[in-house]
Length: 289
Image (cartoon, rainbow, N blue to C red):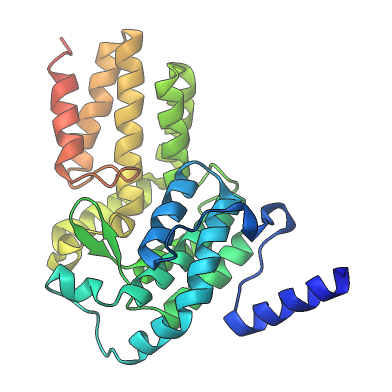
């Protein structure tokens, strides 16, 4: 029986080009509700699972999407010479390509969070090579390219800007945010300082690129400015922690740093618009005597 299971698994692996996952992310596909099996439904479930850190569920939903829609996605990619733009309905008409590209991106995200950077790199490269024109809808009102985001992650890998699960810029910001919610202000300051120390030089370069390159400035994808966004938010959270501790002068230094050095930044974790940081800074500055 076990040999038959292994054989079937290997056949599915070859048929659907499934990227292997570590044993600790194994799952039983029968344990999950796939809804109507529409790719959009699977993506909604996968995003929710990622937010809840239910990595086996992420793999279950994205695997199902890949197995059902990869063939159609490849055909859509082959029919395109350029990235679909313009009317959101036109972009959404490439639904299979969009959702398969997003599935691969989510799987790579799982590997990054589990420190399996080799597997993440393999999936990012597959995404760029085979589904580069796939796009993902952001609830804020625009599409972004998973392949473009994958390139940014690969660049981070090359620059060796991380050493563990919570040392990437976005992960540090997420960790500091959780500490802030728990009112662990010293921990917020410590984690924020880690992010600032590791990524401030890249953030300043990205701010410079934003100021001097019109095409880059028009890119609404948060991944283009991953360090800029993370460092600005790290200063923001550090400032809030200091503010709540009663250290208002030190808090003001953090808020002014955002205004003066990173004016183009906006939060990465929630992909808010670029004005959110500015509004929050103004709010807290108004309370600093």
